Length: 70
Image 1 (tube, rainbow, N blue to C red):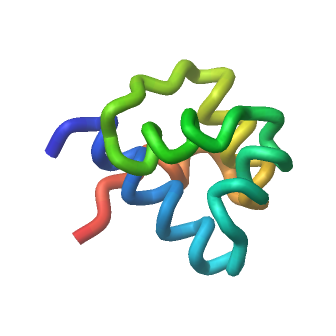
Image 2 (cartoon, rainbow, N blue to C red; image 1 turned 135 degrees about the vertical axis):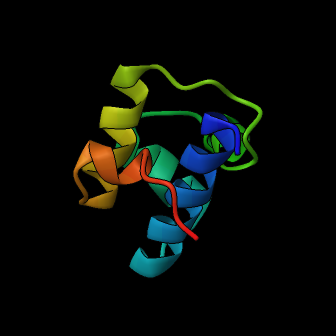
Image 3 (cartoon, rainbow, N blue to C red; image 1 turned 90 degrees about the vertical axis):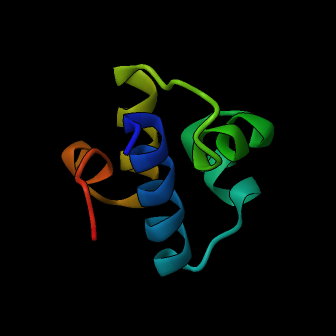
């Protein structure tokens, strides 16, 4: 699996666990909603800084967004 797809799947997973919209996540991470959408769909290649922003907004450690899940 492509790492961009892994990050996207994990961002969506933790966002849904938190019960927030893409728009709320984007606001909390100081990103644009369309960027968050692109990350979740695996078409954006987020930098380490973006992964850190998303992780902080989701309340998880950054490595959680990089983990392969079954």
